Image (cartoon, rainbow, N blue to C red; front, top):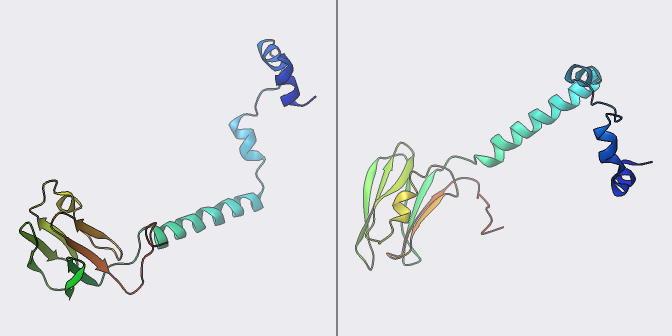
Length: 151
């Protein structure tokens, strides 16, 4: 009789109480059941997952910074030279800092400061958007990064 049929009849619980079910194999016995080919498959799977995570999760490093104001490109510059850029918007001035091949919104006149809390951007496809001031900061690279918004 299958375990599902026993469960339906309520007998599985009774058998468990009476210790009539076979015990699970000890951990050492489970490892002994793995053959050399099984270990190779596990190793290949682990290496494949590690490679996929390293390749696609972290993304490519950014090369350029694109700052938009009101939907139009305000400035496109390389991330190689450290500098601070002031971008004027409807609410005031948004300050963008470039340092060590990464960029961040240093200050923004918006009430919630969400784009400031975004932190440093360094990978292609990362962005910080200051909606109240209509300013966006995006990192671009050689390869266009895809996310759930442009999939």
